[in-house]
Length: 110
Image (cartoon, rainbow, N blue to C red; front, side, top):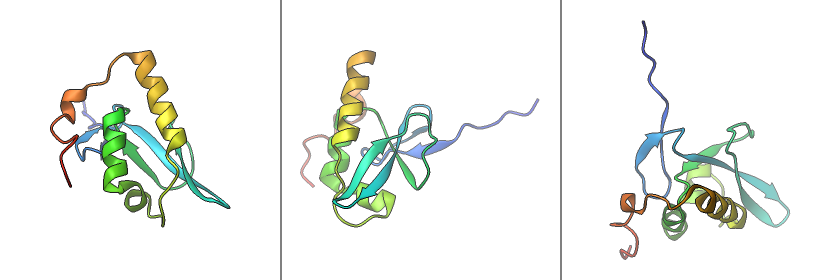
């Protein structure tokens, strides 16, 4: 029997590698005002995507590091409101996120 390895991606917030099933994929959708980040939990949206732990701490780290533009290869600062709302909603329904993973990096000056 052949064992297949699961795909592994890097979180743009905490920079830890994890299985794609643990991370939330998101893409940038452009409009006349710039780019907005759109969550893609089904991993079906077209275009370049990036991955993030569904944790508000990882989102805050990625915003502070300005990692979204580099990960998606877009210019400017994208609107993260839609992504933040999705992460908050998923955090409320699934309980508390695992904050120990990024607790050492939150609040550290860059």
